[in-house]
Image (tube, rainbow, N blue to C red; front, side, top):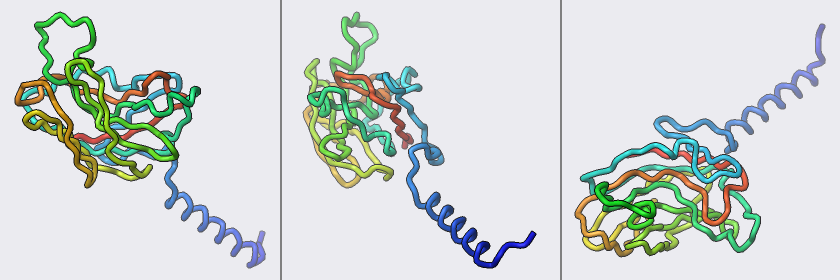
Amino acid sequence: MTYPKRTILTLLLALSFYACTKEGSSEVNEKPEFGFTQYTIPSGGDYSVDSLKFVMLNGITEMKFKFKFDSSAIYTTRDPMNQGDVNKLYGFADGVSFTTQYTIPPHHINSARIGWAYVNKALRIYAYYYNDSAQLFKELQPVTIGKTYTASIKILQGGYEFTVGEKKDTVPRTCPLPTIEGYKLFPYFGGTEKSPQEVRIWVKDL
């Protein structure tokens, strides 16, 4: 069976357009980049699938990593008052002593994390930290969905230095230890509400 030249040309153009569209698009189910771990927070959940791992971080002064969000990070909370709640991306519990009997999680006493929230049509990144059980956060900058960023949290004398891309800011730190003594903290949604949808985040330790 033979096809008219016009039909063949139309099919070729359609296939070409489809290939270009797929290659240039940022799909919500895109595969993780090489060396990255995909963390998935299920709809109706708080913790990512891999967030219950226990990884010690002792004797270092800086936690450095790369991260990327896809369009699943665009969300709307059921209660508009909760839209500004800061979710957690990555970080560490600080000054943890395992000889002490804790009545609350140690990372709710001293810790430092990169936080995130989708507010006013932008994905915003925060310094999120606890000092002597006081919960604190500070916006650092908005980021572009689909773009990979390098971030770090560094121990300074009396402070945490947060870096995201070219943005750098320092916040107070009350823990007196000269290095990180604690455990790694993984992606978490909340806040007051649980995740309204599946959220995917990619992280690579550096």
